[in-house]
Length: 211
Length: 192
Image (cartoon, rainbow over all chains, first blue to last red):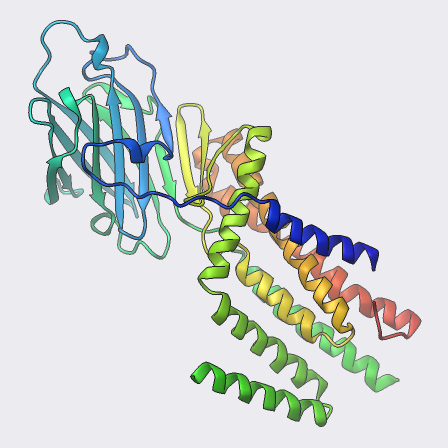
């Protein structure tokens, strides 16, 4: 009985002491990058590409409610010397449900305009969007891709592999970024529950009958 | 309105089974009915709270373990393996919400426990299932950390499930099966 009481206190403590997560902030594509501070990130070593193309960090956030997969990339512009091109491109290779999609974000450094195009496995453009989603000189850029154009259903769970690059510089250098919303629910537990209920009841009834 | 009507109907059916000493049907209707009710009431708020608790616990553990990052406000976990990275969500089914409700519903109508024991058992079961889920998620993270993103399926669908299955099996054995064995030896139905 004492152990049970201890456990009861424990459950209360778990709920009281566990830090309740704050409100998550969704991404607003506006060229302001404060909303990216608490999103998953992957850093890439510097110096493996011309600085104005050298991606040093990418971030991503799949907003399953809005059904948009957001990306953020930053390059090593400070290290650039001499003239730099007025545009740079961030390329995405996305694999989902056995299909390969490609997306391209073209950043205009002069007017901060980012144009995003999504292509299916046949190379046909299936979606495009644009906005002022870069900062001055296109050092940082954010964009979003519609998940409903990539996946047949977002709510049922999905797995995406993403590789990001700008020219020669791939992020990650080897392998991919995997984004998964597939759950680990053990359906077998429900089956087990059913078996235990029936077995327990049969045992109980057998015992009751025999006594 | 329909929900309230169904609750009254459920209570009436339970009363009929109880008065006629149809213990099996009382247990069956009781546990299934309670499970359905809790699922209806808790779906959404309680479930998201559970995801918050689970990701909060894992978030607290992450600095000590150091092989994954947690974003509790999104219920998201990030695991790095060399240059690669994987992000996955603690979602509805991962929260253990359904498993908890099944356990609570069974515990409340299992015939050998007193009311106080049922309250405490339910609380203990919830803690245990949360802990089992934490273990499952940590195991998945560890496998990905060790063997890379390619091990996601094995870690997610096989190992995670297996460990959770074993842990839940232990819970069910200790709560439902073991007391029966004790009862068969001792002959006392009331367990405190």
